[in-house]
Length: 280
Ligand code: NDP
Image 1: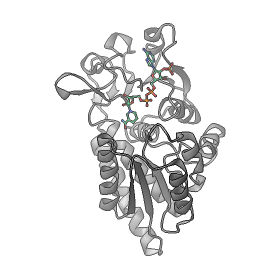
Image 2: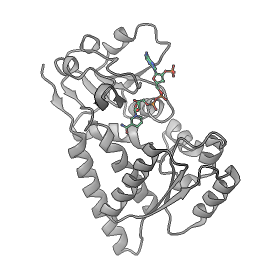
Image 3: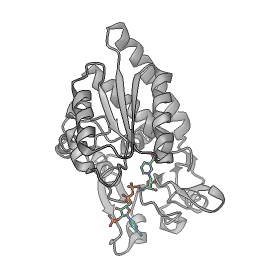
């Protein structure tokens, strides 16, 4: 089988266009959605992410306030800013760019963001609501994976889903979202005994590992849907996913490319969550 491409670039553009329309509707009701993005330190990759988020906000008409703080900002100072943003009526979503410098406890900072402004969905209230199936903000990357499935007309109900990776930002929340959509879910990780055998069971296979091309075609069931979250830089600055694309595409029915699959969805879903926060 030659897989169809699940085109994240195209679907993310559709989501952004939907968000733009929703922003215009909210503005007509006097609500101006706003997102605060906080960056501490000089990490060049984080700076690029923050700029991209600012630009994406601008494109859809979301008010964005970026806070660039120096590397030596204390935890107390950062918490004071978050307390201020929690109170700020212009701000509906707060995102603290991770990783934070070593002297700051990420958990304390994330826990300080008001639940109703936690558009990254990493805080304990959101995660708790996700576990019990209540209203919450879905973390943006797994949310993007679910929208990719939806737009391709793939209903997880009754399907066997295998998620490789159990991080708090991708694997674990995605497993919960698939479960909520009635898939039968297996979560694999570094101690999984026979990864290939587990993967071969999957109707929907998601790779969120961070190991270049660890999933190969022989690990994929004929006709499976393959979502590759991995972004790995290899020789000559080339980007590859966690899935060996060519061999997997020969077996799968649908597959996401890297780049241009899950990647573009993440920011689009952040915008969607910000609008949702403003609507609430
Ligand atoms: P983490 O490093 O936090 O988690 C990796 C997971 O993979 C862990 O659960 C780990 O298991 C598991 N793992 C590691 N080695 C193996 C192995 N040999 N077999 C099976 N499982 C294994 O990564 P993230 O979840 O943050 O990110 C995963 C990938 O997704 C990365 O490439 C990252 O760059 C990318 N990413 C992409 C995003 C996007 O926007 N497209 C956003 C976020 C991440 P254990 O728990 O046992 O250690």
